[in-house]
Image (cartoon, rainbow, N blue to C red; front, top):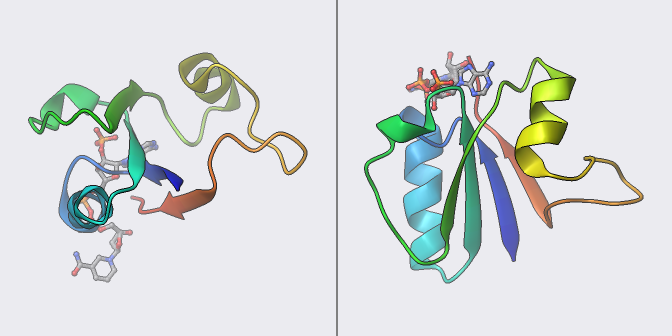
Length: 80
Ligand SMILES: NC(=O)c1ccc[n+]([C@@H]2O[C@H](COP(=O)([O-])OP(=O)(O)OC[C@H]3O[C@@H](n4cnc5c(N)ncnc54)[C@H](OP(=O)(O)O)[C@@H]3O)[C@@H](O)[C@H]2O)c1
């Protein structure tokens, strides 16, 4: 599956990123400071954005997040 993990750079979200990659999924890790995620992986994409800012999200992800056009199979929220 394609997973979007909001807050994937540390804490619980980071654990989720590790487990998802280990399980063979493709992961987009979204955070305001994605460079803080030192992990590199062929199925990992790091994206800069703020979940509270819709404009920053659509710009960062490249397409709208909606039920009609979902960016990810699963949206995993780990936040603030
Ligand atoms: N750790 C626990 O044991 C525990 C237990 C129960 C509940 N919780 C709750 O679970 C949540 C996450 O906990 P955590 O320990 O994993 O927190 P954390 O270590 O502070 O990680 C938060 C993650 O969310 C990102 N983030 C924060 N604001 C964001 C925003 N506006 N847009 C995009 N990404 C954002 C952060 O990256 P950037 O700063 O780069 O954006 C970081 O990757 C919190 O609400 C906490 O209260 C935690």
